[in-house]
Length: 199
Image (cartoon, rainbow, N blue to C red; front, side, top):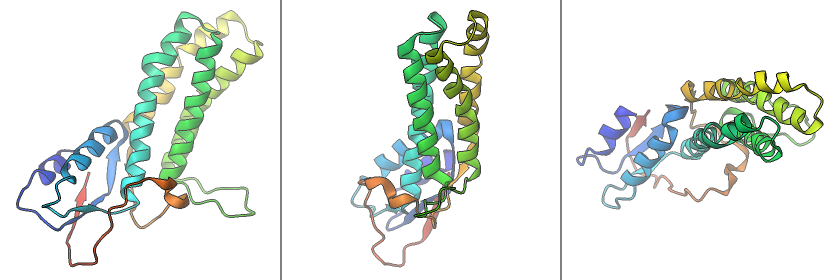
């Protein structure tokens, strides 16, 4: 993050191509903001390698969604352990976090093949989301005791926030699943620009 902030404020740099190599999940939204602000200046003629920008967007989304879960959804369930709205939101965000993580380091799906290759971040996200999905399932099935809900609702935040400290490596040579129609369409103009690496 520090390197990215200092580098993008160097007015002497122009015509460079930047590659986002790694980022801590909790810093991804801020890093994305730094890059977007810096690259709006047409005089610098900077570009960012795709899909590194696309992956950074997914990581930032995960960070933001974890914040929503911790700040809104879990407090709702702490007030009412079996609140159906809270359980529905918990399940929705857990699946959304897993889906976004697959776009970061999961291998593209191959037609006719049901098993996808998981990268380390996707695997961690899937494990972190399991307690949330399990809890929401038991809210709707209503087959657990009051004591079970009270004991397990306090485990939800520690389970999902473990992702925030994870440092994700972003190999820019690997394209994921069609890039999701993101409109981040800055392309390298084919010149002799030097690559700068941000983290």
